Image (cartoon, rainbow, N blue to C red; front, top):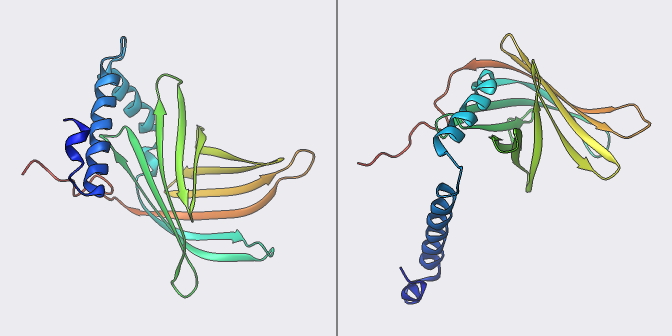
Length: 202
């Protein structure tokens, strides 16, 4: 299709067609790259993300986070995690509720693995902020960091016996780490999210 043929369409339709055309072109280019084996790459991603299968399901518990004024806010915390793209990606959503049941925190993330660099990464969106962060898998969980000027924000999680514990620390060279976040949630059960409800051909 020539892009000129879409000029009589509305701007939203033209934009959608352009995105589809770009995706189609990029998919064809990627699959035709010498040495790229899509089946092998997907298998490597599934194997790597299987290490996070322990997170799959629904979780509920408590979290405490430090407010800008230094006070600690207590929340009811929920998490839901599931595989996507046939297990090649893990999708995570976290929600924090105050004592009145109001949603005061909502975060969404995708965890993926790049076989070319042998590295995990997380794309996170929360409260109007977006970022891509390296994530390191450990024997009992995972950790990830955010560069914040001279400081580093580090989250460290452990998962054992159906309990997911996580802390957040602000680390400044030459100073003791300052803990500003703590979460403890227990696994409630399975979920078919996010793959459940996918549309079929009919």
